[in-house]
Image (cartoon, rainbow over the protein chains, first blue to last red):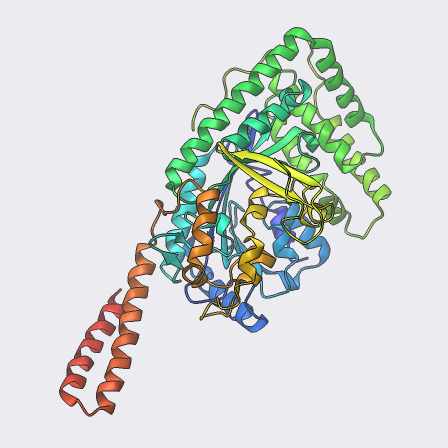
Length: 368
Length: 164
């Protein structure tokens, strides 16, 4: 399979450089860029799209930072491969549903990915595990500068970087963080948080599933506005609000432990039991239970290094990944069995949960 | 105040009235029962009220005279997709665009990063194109003195481009 090297490589989201931390799972920044004097991908015809793809790939492949990276043409990929790439957050659904003349360039660490001919000619994405906007911005900014040496960007003095959709015009920047918020979800405060965040001009999305009931209590929070402020101002505002949410989450966890300890410890204990012994697990159930195990690590009931293993499992239990490792097209029920087996085997090597020394984690995430 | 009767996106009666406050600005959308599902209001992954708000009002679609001279895009196309056809559309549809941008963003003027190198290269290239077309004209009108001057300028510009 074309994508095998990507799955087997040490990737940022599964084997990030830094130890994973509580609450903030990952940070992402993407820049929308277009080439001057060319029709946007949605309006270009097939020849224009494929010419532009060739031009971009030629320029990208000359960049030192993408050396040893891979370029994947969407039309060469099977449906399963496409699904795995979406699950790894390297491409969007829009890209894989495009009609051809599109693709993605992925750096060896998978920290950088450039989609060509998605909604815009180029979507430059930087990704880091944890709460890491500085590093992510530095990566993306520098890659953007290098691309600019080869390609003429569509830019206006008034409107900034011109994008297919006016919602992205200006900086073309969408910055987001994935947050693990089981405390706010269990305390029933997520709706309030979503409302507050919306009022401040940010968007909240469940990683999957419905608004305030996201699978695994994982939410993505991002800026909506791209014009009228510098990248730095946008990031500063976003980071400020994220700190506020992190604090709310810490408070919610503290209150839970103080007021309803049995309720939350029961949930964690049961999750452990099922993951350790279950024989059939759907992807949503697995993610929800793994989310509770991440909380157990944050509470000091499990060694900190288990956090990385949980994050890796959460990636690998997704449907595309399970099918990919099974090397065959399998029915959903068989998938649930394989998923449960994989988790059971992994859990057999983990120590028991330690309910004797539960603590709220010390103030995390101070580096941004 | 009576609610508008027609869906903002089609001609069906509006039965859903959505109000969202973004950045202390009130945004209202009136929808029929079909459009939200088509547009994915019920799917938080796919729905952004912003995309909805950005669709140009129905009145603009009837302005047939407006069309992007570079890519042929019309306001009707924009109403359908919510996206533009090419970078030049931002000039063509400036009047429709500006009020939408001020609703959507902090301001209507870019204050962020500038692609210095690409812009310098682009402006040199455009200057070269202009000089070359001037040269052709000068030759056609047998203005050889001007043609010689332009040829020197073209050579200088080419050199500058090669150095950069």
